[in-house]
Each structure stands twice: as structure tokens, then as C-alpha cells.
Length: 615
Ligand code: G6P
Image (cartoon, rainbow, N blue to C red; front, side, top):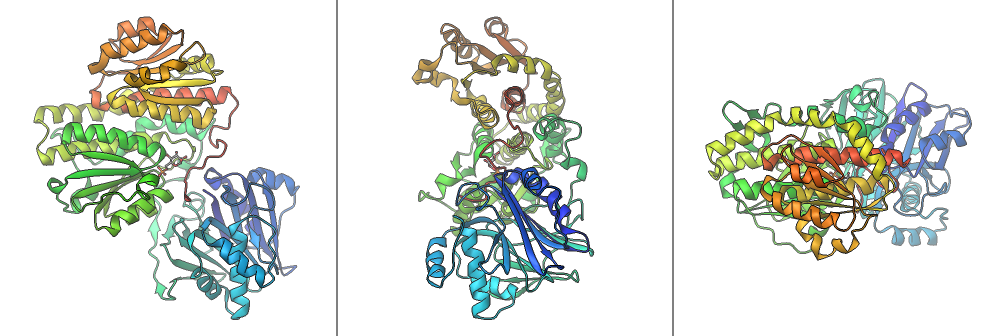
């Protein structure tokens, strides 16, 4: 949700910022803008444009701005629709300050009124323009250095922000600050970079400092930097080493990041298990959890908090944990949970699931839980992210950077880690027989091989996609472990192809969706549950009687289903608890190919953002 990139160093800043923004575009792509300090003219030159970074460059012709300090932004609109004026950076009325912002200033209206009474004029609809003028007012009134002006101004601000600001009258430094929105500092002795996440920093350095909430960092041209908190106390930032490579950030020959990420899943699922499974002993080691010495026997209830695709993995965890570990599980949309006066007990374990580790609602829900003293466990992909740092203990999913906005490999990695957690929990609590545990663990370690066999069917799935590409709607049905997969399959399709799709528990079809079924409503039936074979077959007959086309996801022996469905994709037979890790793969590919056939922007679907850092 908005990408921030700022540079101070010896090189020309403009092209470096352009490259940085391109890597951050998955966070938001409504508009883009760059400010660079021009030493020649002793002024800040700002260019900004509605659209993508490429549109900004096009609008500038071949022009570039010379200077070695600058800030850039790629926007996902919150306040004010996407247009040139609302794009960032925003400059103060006197053009002295230029600022980029990710987040929402909640009290911007009050601040705006106060500034207007002082004679400030506003040209955009944004809260950001209020913030830059507030800093400007504080700076001038109290004759403050830019760092101090930012600190004082932020003490008057309510809301979420990651900001970077530059000062025409002090181009020797830029200042960044964060609260509830991420900001990472990259250091390599030659240049200093601030960015919303580490992806655009990697090609400059692997050494990063993840800023904490309430911290303000000043980057100086002599390559020194200092961090303070809002109370003006010095903070020593901890330098961490990035653990992913440039190759992981590139498409590697695939047409889209999403396709690359789908095709990585045999590898990423293996990575999620690496070092955590001892198949010979059927044991699971989840370091973060075990090191904490937290008593898993004392848990009376597990509450999962998550959003989007991560919420779907939470639903699978509910089935898994209740089935094998016999602990009651509730799965909450973080956005609902945080506002509904929930019952929070210290005998509960709260599991936050998040790819980005920055989702605003999940973070806020965690804060609420922590304020009640309950224990929190993070299942997060992005190392060093806010949720990873805020939770009491956690397990990284180790899926590597996920760039495509529609989540794919992050989902299967989350489900893998949750499966490990469920098995471990069941072992500790004595709710699983040695024989079942052994069966599950042995089956789990083979999942990556099975994923490869499904990926090998991509041409067949592409063919089916070409047949279904013009459907106006689609219905996804699944039962038990595969009901959440139906939700996830439908979400993938609507996210990237803009076809309206619904996921439903198959048996619920009769309570409404059946009224919609006709020859224009293809149905995707996940029929891999051995335990519900007859029931799913009945569903299929009912659907076919109403002339809908059916794509069935089946296992080898589902002969009756194969005979009656229009299309079938076969997945290998595994323990029923593990089928989601396989059944979701054809659904991801189906959504991908349909979106490509419809000419949609697969990696950057309209109105969506990879990381939703605002409410
Ligand atoms: C956005 C993304 C989804 C993601 C959801 C939750 O909506 O587009 O792909 O599932 O946020 O994000 P998280 O990073 O917390 O998993």
C-alpha cells in the first residue's frame, strides 16, 4: 500500500529512485512521483503523474533531474482519487519541503482547518499535503532543524505513517519516520536508502535496519545516520543481513511473477519444512515456538487473526488443529475482531497469519490482544516485518519474496507451517496416535513432489481456462478441508480476472447458489475428499442437471466424477488433511490463465495492493 524509496549518496538519484519504485510498484500503482534536489538551481524539482512509473517517465520525455538526493513514491490512493495533483511527493506551500507518505493521517481535517486559518493553501485532497505543511509550519515558527520539526509535528498527528521528507534549505540530509507503516534503512557506506520494504534495497546492499514504530531517522550526506524516538531519545538501530537474493526478485523467464511464484511451490513448500521435520522419527521442530518454552498443554483455545488469503489458510488450520490436536479454534477477520469487543483470555493462543507482516488490521488486532496480555504467535513470510517483531514467538514461512499481488506460494507455505504446528501440537497434547502422526509426516514430506506433478498439467489447465475465459460468474464448491480452498480459488479468480466468483461449502449449494446455476455459471468442484465422495457426486449430478459446465478437481479413483464432469484435473492421492496443499494449485493456474486470456494485468490487478497498510 504505497511504496516509498529515498536515496542520498554519490550517484545520480533519479534513475536509482526509478528502479527502486519499479520494484515497489506491487504495493500500489495508481500514480508515481519523484522529487530530487537540484544543486544547480538550489531547488527541489518534483515530477509526479497519475499511472505507473512508466507513465511518469513518459510524461517527462527523456528528461531526468540531476542531483544525488531524492525521494520517490508509488501510490495506492486513500485520501483523494488517483490524479496528478493527489500524487506524491507533496511540497509545502513555500516549496521548501517535499514529502512522501504511506498511511493515513486520521486527524488531518482538524490540522487542515488550523493550517488554513494560518493562511496555508491546499491544492490536493490528500492528508499528506496537510502533513508536509504542518511540518513546515512547526519548522518556521520555532526555527527548527528538519529532524526536530518532523518530531514535533508528528507528536500532533494521529494515524499511521511512514514518511520521508527532504528540505531544500538543508539538502545534506533526508528524514524518515514510521508509525504502523513499514520503513527500512539500507546502509553500505556509499549510499543510504529508505524504502517501504527491503526488495529495492537488495541490489544496493544486504545490510538493513528495520525501523520501529515511533522512530525518526536522519540520513546525512557524509553517510552517517542517526535514529531517535518521538521523545528525542537516541536509538541504536540493529543492522540485519537480508537473506534473499536478487534472482528471487526477478521473473526468471516467466511472463509474470504470479506464474513464477505458482511454479516455485514445490520448492517453497519444501523450504517451509526445511529443518523442521524429522521423517524418520515423525517429529516436528518449530524453533520459535519450542524455544519460547510456552506450555502448549495450557492452551484452551486458539484464535487465528488474518486477512485475505491468509485468513483462508487460517480456516484450513481450524480444520487441522481441531481434527488432530483437539483444541478449539476460531478464525477471525482481523478487521472485525479489532472492533467487536472480543473475549480475550490469557489461556488463548493468538495466531497472526500474514504474508507481508504489515497488514494494518492484523497489526491492530495483535495490539489489542497484547494489551490483554495474551500470547501471540506469528506465521509470517517477510522477515523482520512488523508482525514478526510484534508477536511473542513465531515461525517464518520461508516462501521468499512474493511479488505478484495475488498470493499463491505464500498460501501453500502458510498451510505447510500450520500443518506442522497442528501435528506438533497434537503430539505434545497426546491427541494423535503414533501411527496417524507417522502417516501424516511421511505424506507431508512428499507434497513437493506431488506439486510438481500438478504443475506438469499446466497446459491442460490452460486449455480449460481458454474454454471458461468468457464466463461472467463462477462458483467454487468444496467440503471439509477443501471448503477454504474453494474460497481461495474464487478469490484468485476475482482478484486477477475480474470475473465474479463465489466460494461455497458444497452442501450449502442447495441453500441459495443453486438458484444461480445455469449454462452461464461454470462450477469448479473440488472433489478430492475421500470421506465425502458420494455427497460430492450428488452435487455434481445436481449441477449437471442445470446445464452448468463443471471442472472437477479429483483424485485418481473418482471414476464417476470423471465421467460426469466436463473437465477434470487429477491430483495425487494424499491424506485428506493435506489435500488443500495440492487442490489449490490447479485453481491458481486456472485463475492465472483466464486472466491472461482476458488481457488483465495479472501481477498488478486494478484497485488491489500487495500489502494493505491502511484500514
Ligand atoms: C491483500 C493482498 C492479499 C493478502 C491480504 C492479506 O489483500 O492483496 O493477497 O492475502 O492483503 O495480506 P497479508 O500480507 O497480511 O497476508
